[in-house]
Image (cartoon, rainbow, N blue to C red; front, side):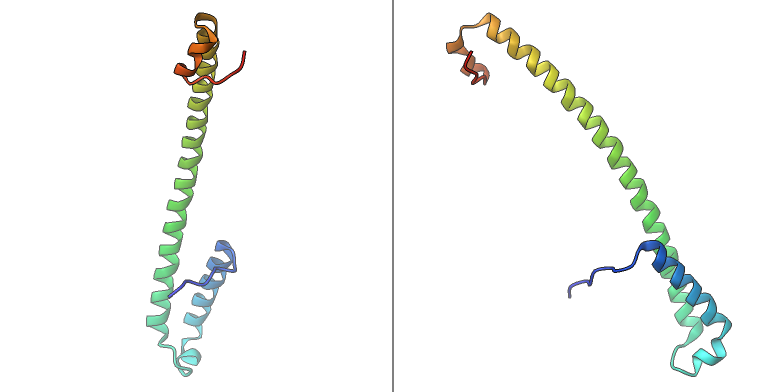
Length: 109
C-alpha cells in the first residue's frame, strides 16, 4: 500500500489538527451524535500530534547534524585536494614523465 504524498506543510497540519481536536472536545455532545467517539478519537489525535512534534524535532536535529558533517567533510576534501596538488607537483619535478602513470598522473607536461 503506497503512502500518498503530504500536500500541506507540517505547521499547517499541526495547527489545523490541534484546533480541530480542541474544538471537537468542546462540542463533544454534538459531535458524538455523528459517529465519532470523541474521547477516544481526540486522545488518539492528540497522541499522534505529540508524536509528530517529537519526530519533527528529531528530524530537525538530524538535519543540523548532517549540515555539520557535510561542512567537516568538505573541509577534509579541500585539504586532500591541496595535498594531492602539492604531491602531484612534487612527483612531476622528481620523476620523468614516463613514470607519472605509476603515480596515477595522466597529465601531458
